[in-house]
Amino acid sequence: MLFLFENFALDTDRRELRRGPDLLSLEPQVFDLLVFLLENRDWVVSRDDVLQSVWGGRTVSESTLATRISAARRALDDTGEQQRLIRTVLRKGFRFIGAAQEVQTPVERRLTPCDRTPDAGRMAEPPRPSQHGRRASIAVMPFTAAPGCARSFADGITHDIISGLARLRALFVVARGSTFALRDQMSHPGEIGRVLHVNYAAIGSVEDNGDRLHITAELCTTDDNRVIWTDSYEIPRGDAFLITGKIATRIVSSLDAEIEATERNRAVLKPPNLLNAWEAHHRGLWHMYRFTEPDNEQAQRYFRRAIKLDPTFSRAYAGLSFTHWYNAFQFKSTAKQAEADSAFVSASRGLLADHRDPAAHWAMGRALWLRGEDEASIRELNEAIGLSPNFALAHYQLGFVQAQTGDAQAAVEAVEVARQLSPFDPMLYAMCAARAWALFRLKRFEEAGEWALNTIRQPNASLHARALSALVLACVGRLEESLREVDVVRRLRPGYTINDFFLAFHVLADDKPVYLAAAKQIGMG
Image 1 (cartoon, one colour):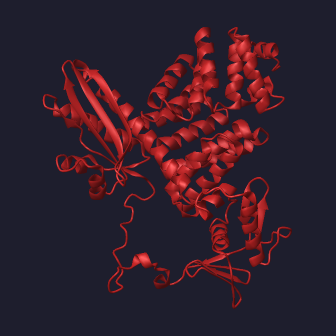
Image 2 (cartoon, one colour; image 1 turned 90 degrees about the vertical axis):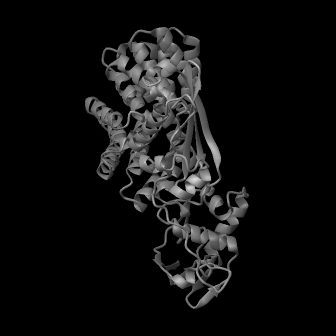
Image 3 (cartoon, helix red, strand yellow; image 1 turned 180 degrees about the horizontal axis):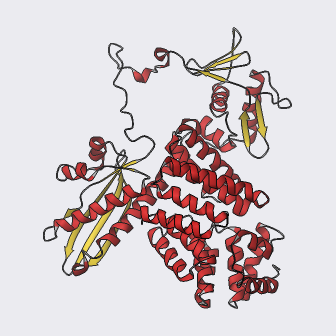
């Protein structure tokens, strides 16, 4: 690749920087830094991004990084005072702000030594391109049935898992016909990956333990044959066919969660400039689920990059909508309307990209709630659940909306489904908070207090969830625990009052006096 800007030309293949006809001398790290900034010139890159790309994630001192930035500027006749081409964004990172043009160099020149065979200089067969585009891929192999077990039962679980994963629309799922055709031919993850060209393989078995059936399932990566998840289930033999669907649902949710976590971690370790749409999306998820304002901004950049690389990627639009939703809900309350509008626009574009993606309807349901359209929000969330009953976040969000202004008992039930589907979800704190609110409305005060405590025990509990917990604890007579939580709220946002709480949530008129009295009691009035 050749980057042209001002009177400079940077050739990534020859690793040359020229000013006019003159070849400039650069240290390798300074050259890599310039390439990284040019490739990512559409957004601000953080210090961590630079370290990951240029230093392979190794820890280096601030002075070392500053020295390389200064050297890059000197090579471009730039300075820290001018910042004509390389700008430092305070507490955010760096960005190349010059107008640059990318020019493809000839294919022959871009071949590296590893593209050629050792003999005769012939080109080796190129790596097989991904057949599944942006998505990770999985093969669910037919569960084996031990002697004495009905093969139809094992086949039924396999079929339900394949269908459940496909309805999530997050992964490329190999069709049942392909995996069942290979039933007795392979079981090794590496072989499954090689033949079916998938990233993950799900393998399971059913054994007869007398009056009970023992079901095991495991998820493996096919590139290194590593087991990344396994679980087992015991069910009464007589009820086997009645609860097959429930077992399959639990397995589907676990497979989806484990793959998403693995893909997020892989994306974090990869240099940002090398991310494809799928990886940029998962890098965005990694930042999004840290629930801080800087990470929320980083997440937005990665989701936008995923969308730029693949404008049909509905999940990236849903992620971008989530970040705008969080800005409106917590980080940028002064720009709440603008952020709510952005959340709605992103969700709408996600639906246009794939109207059968449950995440697109989930994002729209959240955006409609921000706009005060609770009934429309509930319809969208039910649509998401109808498309994929295994989509935990849709169940949670339905509980969130119902807990405040809708059917409180339905909220309890929806949140419980979400927790069963995703017991280690990053949004677990919010599930607990929604349940506490719903139980309080049902006048089940002791349970409400316990779930309020469960909320604040989660390491990533948000400001408003903590405020809700403090109010619920005060209302149910647990004043000491409530006051401790008020101190945490004040540390997170000095001056937080009940008005901030009312601005964040939808509270029924009949419930407001109760919360106002509690707020006055604990100093949040």
